[in-house]
Image (cartoon, rainbow, N blue to C red):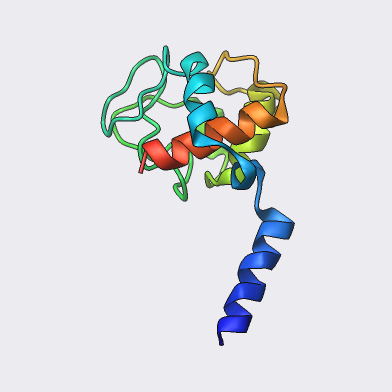
Length: 123
């Protein structure tokens, strides 16, 4: 049974582990400085953008108290390492019609690090 669990986790990491698997949360805190003007990690605290608290595993545009774009509401996206990585690469390309004006993070390491930080800090 343990062997199956280990194989399952290994397979998930290999196939869909996403950028955050290799990310460094300490470095991600520095990258998050680009995000914190618009996003908070504290539950219920909205800014220009919604709070990112508890975002992992949640469907997009479902947190109460924020007016999301129609595109975000209709996206059907569930936030995980892979979807965040794609979104943060070029938000407007990933989700046409999003209100997020951020151009994106070009460096894969920056995306991995900020995702690791969000996962750790916004639990």
